[in-house]
Length: 206
Image (cartoon, rainbow, N blue to C red):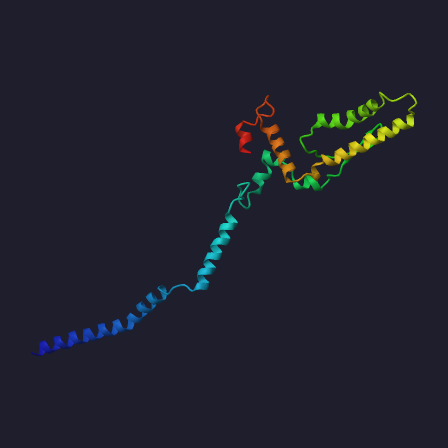
């Protein structure tokens, strides 16, 4: 009988200890789970979205060049970047250079538009003005003096300077600069021995 009472008191004490310990530790577990389950505030969600968008923009490749921030050297060292018209080409040291002719000084642009190359440049500005002047005197009487000839040369020089300003690449619009860039790409990346080969993959890719 005594042993039975002792066992009952032992089990009662164990239940009280277990219940008290569960009461002590239950709030800890419950509060942790409650804190973990709390939803983010609207401001916190907005901040997270803004940070994700900022990182996406920073890591986004250039929409034309395809390079990421920090990889600019890859573009600057490639063949394409070396031949395209740059902004500094049209602003820094882009003033026309003087070309001395028999009739005076012709201010020749450093970069020409409309595909005018060295051959066309020589024809238009070195040969055409004096030939036009001479052709104007073919049907003129011999009474025309040297002074009148000099005046005709000055007129042709003025026309040449006007033409030079028209074909100056600095005065071109976006379409003119794009045309010049395409012309350079075709000239550089065409098949060797086939100038103007627009069907080559390298040209098409540019």
